[in-house]
Amino acid sequence: MGSVIDDAPFTAFHARLAVACSGGPLLDGYILSIVGTALIGMNAELDLTTRDTQLIGAAALIGMFVGGALFGVLTDKIGREIMYTADLVVMGACSIASFWAESIWLIVILRFVLGMAVAADYPIATSLLGEWLPLKQRGTLLGFQIVAWYLGSVLAYVVGYLMLTFGGNGSWRWQLASGAVLCALFLIIRQSTAPESPRWLAQHGKQDKAAAMIEQYLHVRVDPATLVEAGEEGHPARHGSLRELFRPQYRKRTVFCCGFFLCQVAVLFAMLTFGPQILAAFGMPAGTWMDTLGTALISLVFLIGCLPAMRLIDTIGRRPTIVWCFGLMILPVLFIGLWPTMPTLLAFTMLLLYAFFCGGPNVLDWTYPNELFPTHIRATAVGFATSISRIGAALGTYLLPWSLDHLGMGPTFLFAAVVTAIGFVICLWGAPETKGRNLESAATVAA
Image (cartoon, rainbow, N blue to C red; front, side):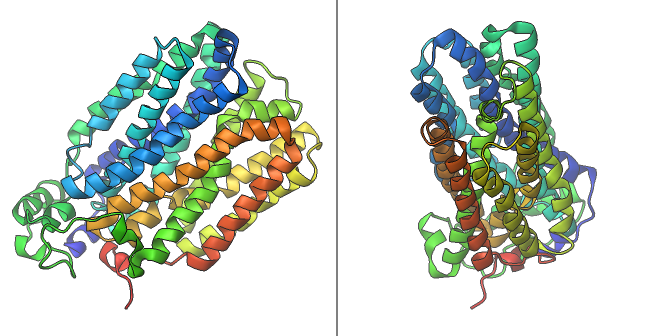
């Protein structure tokens, strides 16, 4: 099967599937970022305490921790198709329900459920996409999923700015509810793409259905008997588990994928969620537009940084890209930590540099776990890596307001530099090279 899919010509089907699968990451970026602008109005209307702000900021990330670990395993057990659209329905329903929320705890609960639904989409959509993509486009289009995340984040800040400008602080309800529009859009798009992965079907004894699906979408006839992956013969119903991720052959890969992902997003999510507050602390006028648009620009540069990185992972390779980028990411946050009273424009430039250098790890967040694990535990690995990363994101988001209030800007960014340096060391130790290798070969661990 590997050669049939890996060597297939890139077609409009692959493009549609990539767009459809990008819905989850785009909604993640939107849902997690829109709360940053909504908090401006919520603070004014609900008189939030620092603790309330911490809980609202971290709730979705905690939900992602639970959802990633749970739904990754389920996706490998029952398939990609069953939950392919259900998660978007849940996201839309929670977004709409947020419009009528009157209590802090209801908002926190809704954000938690939203996080679970978003995390469910990562193992479903990225595994489905990775298992359909030709070899030459796999790195680029898996990397595109994080570009979609930043598109969602930029869109959230633009929408938030417009709603704050024209609707005032009371528009926070509309901001939280606006995610339902994107959910409806991607539900429509997903109806025209492949519902299931032929690799998963063949792995679970449904070779005839897998062959029919390959013929339908790739227009190639294959012998169903040839579709089981090498090394998987005799295990037609083999299921993955979290425990298997820590068996000797996969342990290093698991620690690497989880470790670099965690160190990256711990800083990144805190920066994006509380971007307006960070910029205000450096002297940028606080309010409803300058700090909000400043954070939107930082999100845009996060996105721009992904574009050369998508090229680099297929030219110089995955390992050099992630190692060099992590090393460069340390410098801007270290500089801010050592000089926390720097001029506003210089501080803003440092944040933009960090955002640009973050492109390498960003495009490999889901590329690496999809390439380094076989079909029967691929979604489990993606879900678990996402889940662990959200521990860092939740801690960073929860602790950042407290750290700014009690420790100040300098120690806060020095801690960010330490976390980023740990990620750099993890990449030096564990980052493998998978450039140019088909999916089965990349997932094979040398004896």
